[in-house]
Image (cartoon, rainbow, N blue to C red; front, side, top):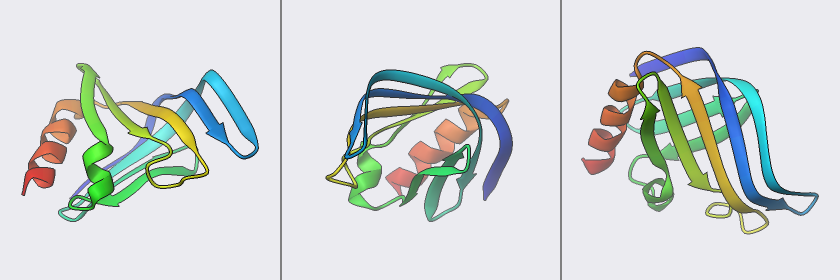
Length: 112
């Protein structure tokens, strides 16, 4: 199990639409957390659960976990994949010294 808390970062919303909100591009600073177990991936940012999915759930295939800087992990997903009332792309970027380890573990666990 891996737990990283109080990670500074940003959430970027692109062409994001809900029944009450639309943003072509919106970026906000956040404090976040990543939890990675042998069964699930969880990503929180500013008390909002962005990702909570088992590794072998079909939705997990649409969630990309990458390292876009040596100390920054990026978790991106389609907001409408799990909720038909939403659409757009969401990118959660969090700073952690363990970014490459987290990305490697996510790939490894999803491939099992």
